[in-house]
Length: 254
Image 1 (cartoon, rainbow, N blue to C red):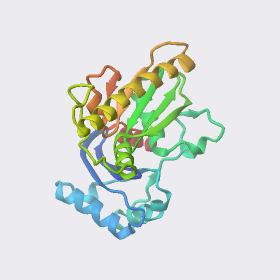
Image 2 (image 1 turned 90 degrees about the vertical axis):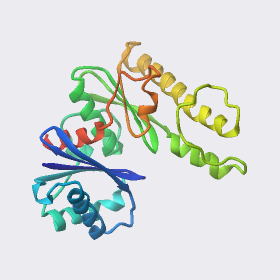
Image 3 (image 1 turned 30 degrees about the vertical axis):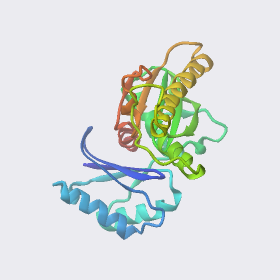
């Protein structure tokens, strides 16, 4: 089995695969100060507590956007699994032509999203919207070229920013409101956050379509922790929660 780890700024999102089937998903806080022992013990314990033997892991693949954790991650894999992990990076990617002035600027998580999207929709024009700490847009042509994208603050980051920088606004639950007009301060925040993202997704997708695909409607894939909130808003062709993990798996097989 292959253990795949998406190491983000807020969380480590992990998945255990048997061939192409995901058997286990888990999350853990992402801490740049974490030691190799802390990481290794957590990984072995989460497998054990879910009924999997760590010895069944034959390979480990990682997409990390936290460089300060890379050494500890690699050391944990070597010490606790006796496996040298594969770190997905633009430099070792052979599946996507990254049409940027500096291809190495593309985050490993976004690269993984693109690789998986091309697997699910081969030969299609694609926009991948990953709704995590940030909401990212990635644009891929039908001939497997990465054309660019956009980054905006995600729902949680926007909420935290409002709370930290205003004196009377407090944190609220992020959800889909019943109406666009809030009646309380909490509802004002919820409608602004939610429908602000809906409008943002629609506007950016339209502009991307015009600029990259001559107005043709691309396949728009939603992924990330908040994508499911928007499944009835007609902004996504499909929502694929495990897109990044599948991309890490596919990218490591090359």
